[in-house]
Image 1 (spheres, rainbow, N blue to C red):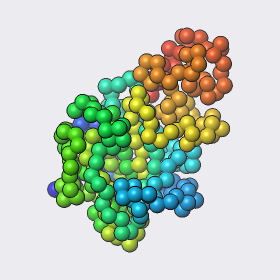
Image 2: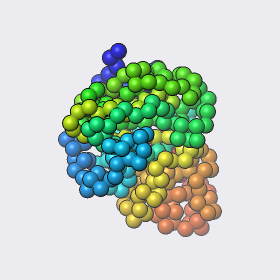
Image 3: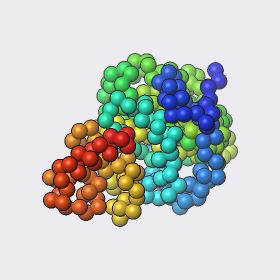
Image 4: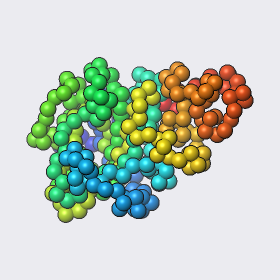
Length: 287
């Protein structure tokens, strides 16, 4: 079964509707391939230094390079892409705000077998979230063409509506083939897995995921991005990274201080309660 595709001219509402119906959306040609090439060039030393995975799930011929906010200016732009944030905001619109969950380049080497089919939200200690209550909206950008031969992500369309702890085989999945510069959206409840790379080249994908703000991030953004770098970043990106209160009061610092004020060195006595309420409102709007 060929997977449906959307055009780059699609609106966030179009993308979110497709995700809600099928658990995924493929949008072709969102970025010029040269943008992803630039990101790879910026990350080159880190990609080369990343060890292969320690087990079959991570991939013994696969490198997973994180910390992309600190390491790549281009990746910062991709994380904040308006089509992505608009679609994610609709998929996760049942909560006060959402946050950046992880950033990672997944480089699948030749000879890597297919990954076990799974749900990403199982990372939350296999907690059985209510069916239909989404806690993640994820993206994988094709840095190189994604083909069935080179390990395109495999998905089970519509499986976001199925019960938890299901087991699927490789034959139950479809490859999310797409040209470089395209992006695959999928929910944390969609059953999927990395494909087998039967080609002679590395398949590069940029995995950027978002989650509701009241859950712990998979990638610790506060340590992945040193404070001296964080202080140079724009407020909207910092708030997405977690320098904002999640829900009503989660994540404040000392005397109800806004996390962004703490990062900027604003003392608690210099912040009025009205300023905190305004900061909370900004956080809600950013989600």
